[in-house]
Every structure is written in C-alpha cells, then in structure tokens.
Image: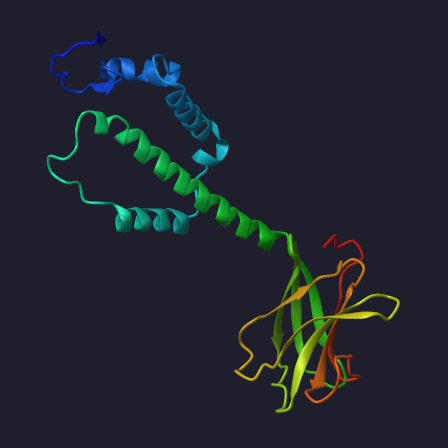
Length: 237
C-alpha cells in the first residue's frame, strides 16, 4: 500500500519515491506504469524497458564475454561506506546495478558479434607462389570496413626479404593499374599474419600481388612478383 506524506519510518521492504513509500507488492506496478514520477524518471524507466525489451539483452553471450563482464564488475565494485547511505540515496540501487550490468553486457556482446561478423563476412583468396618463389603458399582474407578494405595475409614458405629489400602488397585492376596496400619483410620468422589496407574498391582491383622491392628504388612496382591471387568474380568484397 502507499503512504502519502507520511513522516513515519518506512516499513521493511519499501522504497521511497518523491515523499512516498512503495512496498514490494506495488513495485512491479510502479515499474510498469511509472506513475507519480518526474519526466527524468519516466525517461529512465523508458530506457529500462527498451533494454529489457531488446532481443540482444536475452541472447546468451559467448563464455568469454560473460567472464569479461564478471571480471570487470569485480574489479570496479566500490566498497560501501558504513552509515553513509540514506533513504533517498537507496532509491535506485538495484535498478542502477541492473542497468549498468545490462549495458556492459550488451556492449561486450555487440563488440563480440561485430568481431564474429567481421570473420564470417571475410572473402578468402588463395595466394600462390610464382616461379620466383614456387614453394610459397597462403591466403588473403578481405573484409570491407568504413575506412577501406582490410586485408590479412597468412603466408607460408615465403622466405624473409633480404637485407636492403622488402615485400610490398598490391592490388591491380584489369587495365594494368596497381595500387600499393603496404609493405612487410617477414624477417622475424613470418609466423604472424600480415595486415594490409586498400583504399580502392577491391571489386575494381581484384588481383593481389606480392612483390620484392629494393629499398633504393622508386615507389613503382618492380618486376619481381613472388605471389599472386585474385578475388572471385562474385565476391562482393
């Protein structure tokens, strides 16, 4: 039941809101209707409803996401000061905790889904060695982003570039025009993927080359092509 402008001590299990005390029995009605609250409180309740109504709130996250959320909450949970919390300050403790946890969880889930989507949307291109490096093999994973085309090369049996030289990635169109997408050397074992970026449309520049370039020459592509690959015609990258 409700007590309006009642100066008595609140009963156990009640929450005070704008001079009134709410029992556990009426709290569900309060959350559903938002009766008696200011516009700020109603906006806050609308936010809670939107969060709880969203399908992503109830989607089970990957195990690593839940572990990250629980770890973050443990590290950032403040120790309460004894006797410092008044009735008014306890007004939204549970809802604040629920909203904070839900927002953190949703953010991590969305970030994870973005990473998963980036992986599943990749276009894979087989990379093969030329007569200069016939043993070299690998693949290029290509994914469009808001800033360009992200290209990850995973190469095997391509030896390190000799001192005084480096490898350079290129994309080429069918008119024989090439654009550099970055350089690398493979001198530290070559176990890590090579990440390159293209600022031109990969559908218009579907061929991928790796060349060996001397450091003392200009920016033009040399004739030392060591690996090649080409996007499928309907890649949509």
